[in-house]
Image 1 (tube, rainbow, N blue to C red):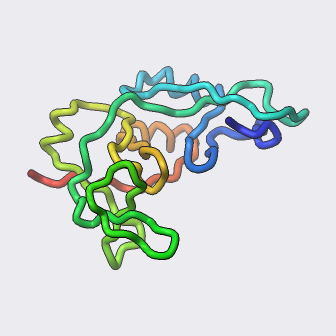
Image 2 (cartoon, rainbow, N blue to C red; image 1 turned 45 degrees about the horizontal axis):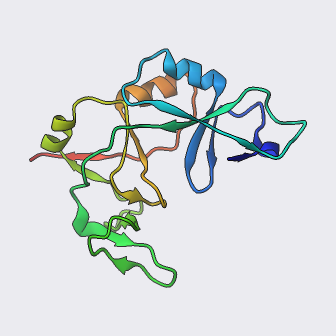
Length: 163
């Protein structure tokens, strides 16, 4: 659900709290023309009314493809209210990755597990990574297309470990 007053016609890509990625109809059409594997869209409903709201709808970026579990579980933690909690294998909770001295630690995947999944352009993590829901992971092909077409993204690398 997107608050109508925030649904400005100038938005190409946006985020609905906590981190649902949405795109304008124009961006959706661009992405659909590329036949990206794993890319799906969900309808975004406007909450309220605003004379400044876009007449075109917005769409949530989704994927039915679920990645295997990350390989670097030894670096997982659960964010807590007071202090981080040790990861105990509970995948229903939000997980973060702590790999000092790096601030933005990378998710790691095993090459053999990704190969078994097959090629994809967009997928979602098995884990609730940094949010109360899975994160999206995109291919280099998807990323380069967005750069070329000036579709703004906020991304971080994913590491593929040899087996």
